[in-house]
Image 1 (cartoon, rainbow, N blue to C red):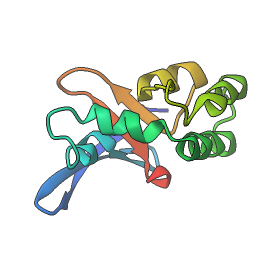
Image 2 (image 1 turned 60 degrees about the vertical axis):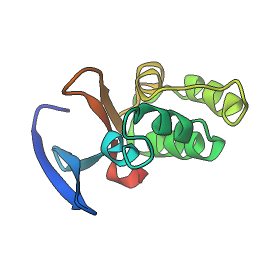
Image 3 (image 1 turned 180 degrees about the horizontal axis):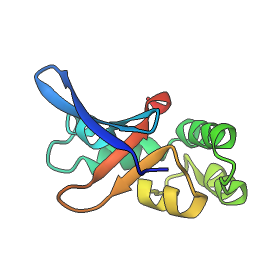
Length: 120
C-alpha cells in the first residue's frame, strides 16, 4: 500500500505542514500540527487528542469502513478504556494493535505521525 509516496507541504500561518500522498490518499502531519500546541514535544498533544472516547470511536469507525483487516476486538478494548484517567495510547500502539491504516507513524529524525485527511 505505501509503495507510491509523494511528499508535499502546506503553508499555514507561515509554518510548514507536511503532506504525504500514498496512492490516492492524503496523509497530513499531526506532528507538524501538534507543534502549534507544544513545539518541543508534539507527541503529547497527539496522545492527549487520542485519549478522547469520541476520537477513538471515530478512528475505529473510519477503520471499520475503510480497512478490511482492522482488528475490531482490540478496538473494543480501546473504546471501553478511552476517556478514563488511566487510558494512554500512542499512534504507534494504535496502529500495531488494531492494524490501522488511517495513520502512519515512525520514530526518529525523519519520523512523525500522519493521519488520513478524513481524520482531521
